Length: 360
Ligand SMILES: *Cc1c(COP(=O)(O)O)cnc(C)c1O
Image (cartoon, rainbow, N blue to C red):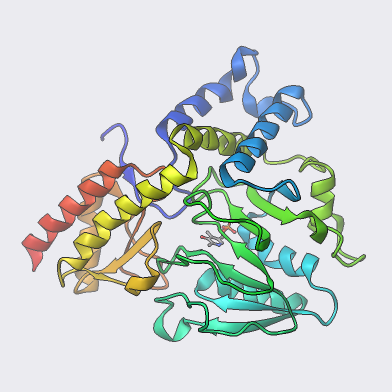
C-alpha cells in the first residue's frame, strides 16, 4: 500500500496532510502542555483560545461582517433543515425553496413539518442536472426567505451566481463553503457541515445575522434556538472540541495558501482538467448541464454500469479511491474540494485516458 492514496470521497473528505500530522501530535500532547487536545476542558483557557482562533480565521477568510454571529453546532447539516424554519418562521409564515437535489428536498420536507415551504423551482424532472438562473422562478411575495443549496454534492451542480431577490437568502453551503469569495450581506443565514470542505464530521458552522436571533417562537426548546448558542459563544453545552480545532487548523492552512480567492483559482483549474477530459470524448458523459457544473463534485457516466463498476475498481487499485457515484444516480463522482491535491486530478485524467483506450 502507498503511504497516502488520493481520496475522492464526497465526505468525510480529504484533509490537508499537514493538518492531519499536526492534529495527530496535538491529540497526544497539545502545545507541549502534557495533556492531549481532546482531554482539555472546553472551558479551559487553552481550548477557548482554539475556538476563538477558529472563529477569527473564519471571519477573516469569509469577510464576515460584525453583525453576523458565527456558531459551532452539532447535529450535522441535516439538523439545520429543521432549525432554520423553527427559528425563522412564525405561525402561518412561509419561505420559498429551490429544489435542486436530495439535500434541498430534505430541507423542504422539514420546513413543511414546521411551517410552509413554497417550492419556487425544481429540477427534479431532469434528475437534478441543473440549477436555475435568475428569472427562471418567482419567489413567493409572502416568503420570509429564499432557501437554496449552493453546491449539490450528489448531482454535481453548483450556483455560479447566487440568486438575486429582495428577500433574504438562506443557504446550505455544506459542500462549497470556503471554496470561493462571495458577499455575505444578502444572506440572513448560512450553514455548512464541516466534513466536506472544512474539517472532520461533528461540527456544523452557522453564520447568522444577529437581528434574526430574536425571531424564534417562545416555545422552541432551548438547544434548538440559535440565540442560546449565540449568547454563550457556542459554549452553552460541550461543543465538538476536536472538530472545531481541526476547522481552525484547516483555516490556517487555507490562509497560508492565499485564502479563498487563491483557492477559487486552484479549484477552477483542477475542475477544468476533469471537465476537459469528459468533453474530449463520448466515452465519458457528464451528468450536470454545462452551465451548472460544480467545481467541487464532478459527476459522470460511462457507457454501461458494468464498465462503471470496473472503472471504479481499477481506479481504486491505482490509489484513486472513492469514485463511486451516490446510490441515487449511480455512475462516478470525483469530489475535489480545496484540500484535494492537483496531482490526484492529473492522475485521474491519465487513468481515464488509459481506461477508455482499453474499453472503447
Ligand atoms: C452532506 C450534505 C448534507 C448533510 O450533512 P450531514 O452533516 O450529514 O447532516 C447537507 N447538505 C449538503 C449540501 C451536503 O453535501
